Image 1 (cartoon, helix red, strand yellow):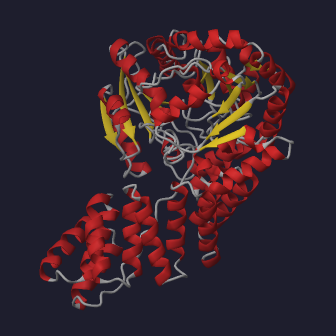
Image 2 (cartoon, helix red, strand yellow; image 1 turned 120 degrees about the vertical axis):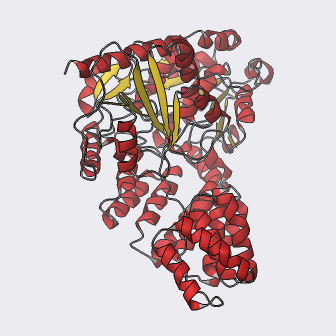
Length: 612
């Protein structure tokens, strides 16, 4: 799987639906009834304890093992729950719930093929079990089999038309496939089925960022509707225990579910280290992690924090109270409307100053978020009116990338040995709309013999590969000139840039992580300057990298610049040889420089509140 889309960091995917615990067949009715009562009351620790005791007396009761595994599932102890549920299905091979909940546990442990088999067994036993079709859809999406996931969600909806979560996840799969109008319709249907469905409302906002021609005024109105929805669910604080001292050390809280090998983690890691090394006398950074998953990136970020709290099981109210009691001065949302966000909690206003930064490139719509961090390149002042937040611009760049800890050498320019130019794009294919395809086809036709390599998670799906080739064929382009590559580990993913001469940025949703990685691998990125913040992310990256001549003003200029750069192999080779050193010395990778600017910005926001 491509390194940065493990569970699409910019969407919501509801967790598997656990089966209900049905009446036992073997256990005495009183004991079984007591377990069911504990399950229905949500007392999962007591349920676990009771099931463990009964398993000693009734070791051959599949029901007891099912209850124990389910209790562990509901407590998030997934690996522990697999054994009990495997024993349950061996004792009760016809039990639908046991197979389905075993699938939930296996999926949570990334044992996806086994999870698929469990869900299919449940469906074979009970074809009308909508929850199993829904859970199968989640698993198929995780496996990259997007068209099959769509079919599973549609079957769940045929069986249960009001299944809001299935509508929402259908939207996610359709969005991954680039079928954005259908995705928006699915999200809206989910919201209609469940009027307080915050995730579906947020997904509407997120999906709109991909659409060419999305009206900023419409997007702002929809963001405000989201803000009203979450505000109605909160009881915001209006006072805080924080001392109004302009010069004292500040307590900064970061809220994110993406402090892992994920774009947010990659951009944050170096900044956190620089704050710990250079700004620790001015800032204490505490982290509220909305994800149980831990990897090497997590551990390095945690080592640089002044405090760490796993908040994945906390309600919005409990988390807000915790943040307020921690006396956080400035609370920073790193997610926006992407997966694992806690935006509804920000509506509680647990800190006197709240900021949106890094993980989202548009307005959140949450009225309780005071500021959005931007820079002069990505967000011109003319766009300020399309944000509910006030805008604070950092002087150079709004984000600073961490050099990958991967041994990936920069190769000589491929064109020199191949005799033709190879363009490439490793972005999420949802960004590759019909306008992008048309322009890229023009580029390839204007550069004789050139080829294009696309690499994305979606290209693990054979049907999606066929569709992509067909989209280029519409413009008269031979499919053999477009190479398609699927997911791969990060080291292999980065090494794939050794095949590329020039990277092509999609639009209007331009690249972030992929562009930074491309530059680090010596591959310049041609980007198109749009009007919205999301459409100018590439502008900020290229200008700060010292490559302003790689920014196109319109589609014709994009084609002209691609042709011009492709026609100067000597200049391309020289740029490739120096580009990693150039960007490492630039604002895009200079974490100490960025941390200093960030500290000044946060201090400025704090001063505004102190003086208010």
